[in-house]
Length: 356
Image 1: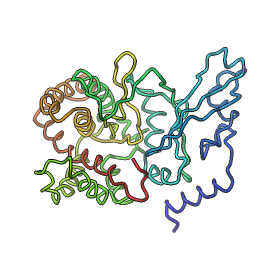
Image 2 (image 1 turned 45 degrees about the vertical axis):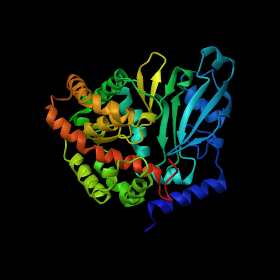
Image 3 (image 1 turned 30 degrees about the horizontal axis):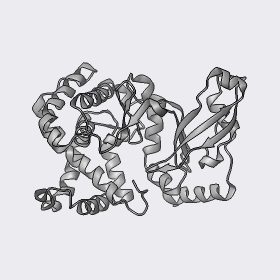
């Protein structure tokens, strides 16, 4: 039987040979250069029959887990008069390794977020003109409203204020509370991966264990010595944390809430992007991942209990339930191990995984 990876590779090579342009509404551009004005008109001008796109210009490449490009748009006079968007921001799988990595469920997760989950939520998050992928070739594109100069994306050098982290937690509580124990999780969102299943698939298909252990050793210079001495305990404990996560009540979680996936709007609000690890899971992973990557060690030690209590109040108000603090504190601490795994993996990606 042909493996999934072999099928993806064969389709990618076929796309390279044939170099098909994207013209019709259902086409998925296999690379950015395949995008035509005709295809872009179907996306951006579909509600305006007199408007059409007459030119597209690609911005510089930016790749990680996905291949990202900003695209500048030229319209005919009708399009210009309507004030249609002059640019869009896209995420795609234009390279073979990106198709292979994101085929494990990330494309399904992100397109489900923009098509089914995002419309239900009053949160600061990007909105999509189009989110689609091909389930055989895993060519994909997510076309977003370009935030442009209206937002500043965070990075690991930023010093966050406590009020900003509270805003992050309010956004997460809105997401988690809305879908907590929701019938949708078994119905229209039943196709989404559970987080613990995603964890297992990453290890099965891409040697998650090997990447984490190599990353742990590569990070020796910044790890506390007392933790480094316990290296042999880390992966077994991480497996237990993932298994524990799978036994907890479910909601929708973002799953990859490190600081560089957050942005600050012109008005000072915190927004969250990059939803390709959207899963059914427990809120504790998002909360501990956010707090530990947003704050310095000193800030976290000083504020984390107050921040967890803040989140629990917001979660209950958003449709979740009242959780005793000590129970929440235990779940929060346990899921710190899954956060460590996600961080160490990016330091030493396997050969079949893009450089993250």
